[in-house]
Amino acid sequence: MTPLNTSTTPAEEIYNESIIPSRNVIERSYGVWKKRYPCLAMGLRVHLDTAQAVTLGTAVLHNIACPNNEAMPPISPEQENAINMNLNLNLTRY
Image (tube, rainbow, N blue to C red; front, side, top):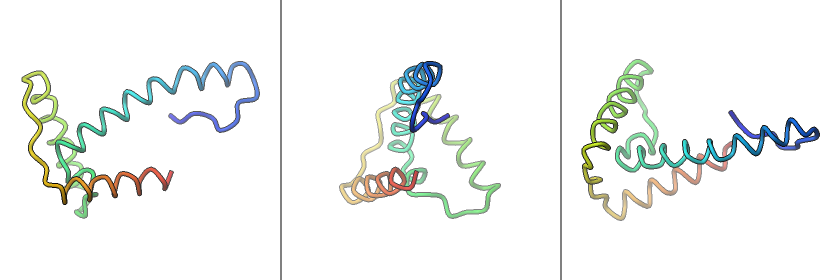
């Protein structure tokens, strides 16, 4: 769900005010997930069925790692730059 660009009624303003905090939490969660599994941030260039399996698999592993306080894997500076460039590119598309 996305916020409305221009809210003209009180109901639309309430909608925007309520959706933004929820959306921020979700976007931060996606950011952590993509940091743990850089293949998600870089974009998967595989068949749709394989992409679904990779996405599901990384979600399961991430949900196992979080409650067990697993450390994030080390990321090289090159990977970090590539991920950040890709994330910025994705943000400007939408």
